[in-house]
Length: 79
Image (tube, one colour):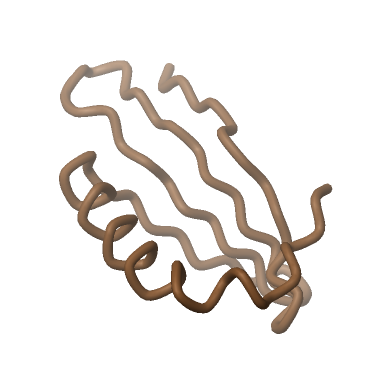
């Protein structure tokens, strides 16, 4: 059975989407993946499984964009 561990769960305050980050380790082996689960209003989900290299690149690009802007923005609410 695949092993899924929840890493973080939060809500986007501007679109009210629920976002969850999970680590997925497959029973068959291979590279552990990060799963991004975005729950829209109702029951619609968008799910991405990304490898560690892609996650690092994506995180770096998001941080580069957010750093100069985030100091003046309120933090997202915690659940």
